[in-house]
Image (cartoon, rainbow, N blue to C red; front, side, top):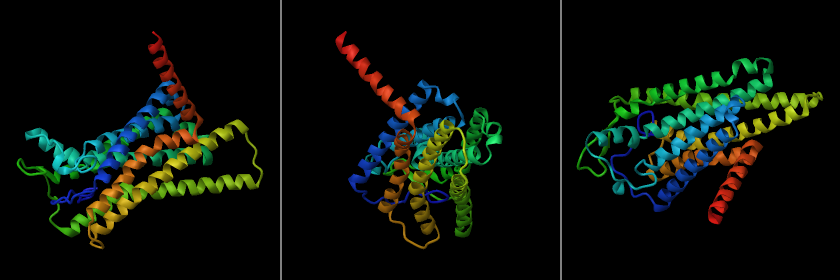
Amino acid sequence: MNFSSVTPTPAIHLQVPLIIHIMYGILSNIAIIGNLLVLIVSIHSRSVIKGPLHTLIFCLAIMDMMTGIVAFITPGFAFAYDTFPYPNGTAGLLYCRLIDSEYFFFSFGFVSIYIVLLISLERWCAIAKPWRYQIVFSVKNCRITVLIIVVLQLSLTLENTLNMNHKSGNIPPCIWGSIFADALARNVFFIVMETIRLFIPVCIIVLCYLDIARRLLSRAKIGHTENTIKAAARRRATVMAFSASIMLIICWLPNELYFTLYQFKVIDLDEILHKTFKILIIFNSSINPFVYASTNELYRNGLFKLFAYSRWRCYSSSKA
């Protein structure tokens, strides 16, 4: 994050080890390619129109792919600050405020967090309130809710763009300056935003799966019977959603907790350690396609068919 509600770009950048830039580059490309494949499989198999869960997975894949793209073109990530080709003039100012400030990087990330929250609520409703599931979690409702989340999260992170300015001649030319002169106001704003954008959704996600586990264990103890095929499908979907949720919590909390401690002057900011924690955020976007493929046959079989078709096309072209 950047130094207000998100984590700032320090005025003086330390030399970041090359391995960190390499990791950013590799994970960014995996996030782009992996999630693009998920989107292709979803469209090809028409899974997007099959139900709310796959609609939400489709939206999450879009956000994860966008996170990978933005991470790749953000200075200090895949490329060092002093080697990055910054644009000049108005384009430079826009670049500093939208990209270098990490506005889009964290905005897309926070959208992903809330989509995972929606997925968790969808799974909970499917198990706890099945009679209301079709009404509450229709495909149309999911699409509208995701659109609202995107607009709100882009708005909630907007202050980050106001903290960054462009100064031609400087290397790097993007200069950070917090819009909050008062430390108390800055800290209050920070903790309110962090609570809304991260801590509340994470707590709800955890509560959803704790209640799901309680209900499933209770049904198993009393010998609850239901359609075996439907139960197996619901179990696979829930395992996939749970796995994606756990990965999100593991990958996001270290960076957010670390910067929260810095914000309240409990620790000093170590830029290299901070960059390392941000690698986990991109890792989350890059690992999700593997989570879908390993826990759900729809995506696994879709990827196999896609690769088989690609090999067949290559073979046909070589024979022509």
